Structures are given as structure tokens and as C-alpha cells.
Length: 320
Image 1: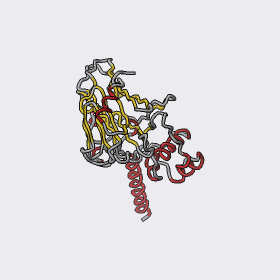
Image 2: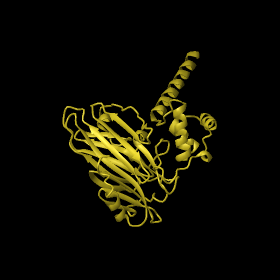
Image 3: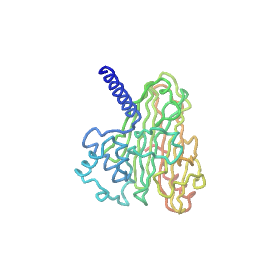
Image 4: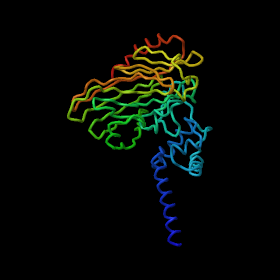
């Protein structure tokens, strides 16, 4: 009888352990590595993204007591939120996870990875932001070479190779950058520089393989879920004039605009909803580096074609 009881206990413990392991595998939380990181991410989530306690827990893996103690320790509350001045650069912060950046087509973006995502806040409403995924996906002649969430298998999924999680590098001058090195030697990365009137972006890819890479299509996504007045799941509020892709607000007087050069495919995906000005790297020989230039801005007015012309005159397509 005792042996039977002990065996039963062992089975229960094994089942619980297996369940816990499965939950850990499914969790997308990233626990802050130290106090400095904990404070940064709490300010990010509470001040800017207005996260609920459950969303903070989903993003960090912290329990309610840990979250409350840290908030009290550093007085991180909505009341202590700093205000952006009109002449300051647009507010850009890493997207923390814990809240899915899409409204719909969620089965097409399971477990979104935060290391490619930045939140860019609108200048007219400090509660509204877009999430730019830079990049969401990279294709090459090898197949789907990178994907910033779980959906279609990549060449690494097919080999059962897992890519380690990364974070944006936060620079003292307000820029953000990251670089990922893939197992076959391909390196790619993104740099983002906020200014008062726009966000300038650059993406690069270095071929560390022994063969020329071709068909280097990139998918860069600007998700609109967090932008008040821009969440209609329709094509009717979108304007496409390659390389520019824009979304009009419900009041008809506010716009979100993005562009990449060279643009391969400008489009919008209403279910998400999101904007795409998807670029394509030139073919890349072994040891060579290719670069792309990107733009994201906000516009208040009704003449979107004139705004496209004004943006073009800035010369944003040329590297800074």
C-alpha cells in the first residue's frame, strides 16, 4: 500500500513538473536582470504603455508583490510620468511585450519577440503609439531566414535551432540599435534615431556565408493597435503611394506615415491593422554589407500628397 501511495505521489510530482516546464516554455516573459533594468522596464510599462498589473506580470514574470514593492520603491506611478516637450524628439521606447501588438490575425503572430519592436508615440496624444517591427521577417534564396514571432517555420525551425533572445541597445544620444548573428553567419541589424519631426531608420545585412545571397526581401511592420483613431480594420483609411504608406485617423486630420527605400512592396493588412513599406536588399556577395533607409512620421492636415512631397524633399533616402 505504501509503495502504491509513493508511486502515486511520484506520478503527480512528475506531472506537475512537466506542466511547469511546458508553461515555462510557453511563457514569453523576460524577468529583468537587475534593479536598473527592473526600474527601466517598469517606467516603460507604467508611464508610457499604461500597462495593467496583469500585463506587467505577463511581460516580466514578476508576481504582484514584487511589482508593487518596486513601484513603491521608485515612485513609479501615472502621476510621476514625465511630459514630452513639443521641441523634443518623438518618444520612442522598446516595446515590452505582455500585450499583443495586434488586434487581429493573432494566429499569424504567436509569441511575438520584443527585440525587434519599438513603440513610437504620436505627438498629439501621449497615450497613443504604433509598434514598429524592424524587421518582422527576412527572406533570402535560402528561404524564410528570420521571423520575429511564431508562424511559418523558418530555416532554423526546420533545423530545430533556437535563436537566443536579444534586447535593443539603448544609446546615450537617444538612438536604439541591435544586431543579430544567425547560425550561418548572416548578420543583420537596425538603427533607429528619433527626431522632433520624424524617426529615421537604417537596416543593414552582412553576408557571412560563402555564397551570394539573393531575394533578400524584408518585411517591416507598423502596427496600429495602440494608436487611438487608427484602429479600423479596413483599407479605406489607407493611402499607398510607393514608397509611402499612410493611415488616416477617424477625424480625417491626423496621419501616420512610413516608408523604406528601396521599396519592394507597399501594402496594408487590415485585420492587424498595420502598414508596410517593405524593402529589398540588393544581392549580397560573401563579406559584403547592404543597407536600407527608412522613415516614420506623423502629420496633422488633409493634403497627404503634399506631405509626401515635403518628406521626399528632406532627402531621407540618403544615408546620414
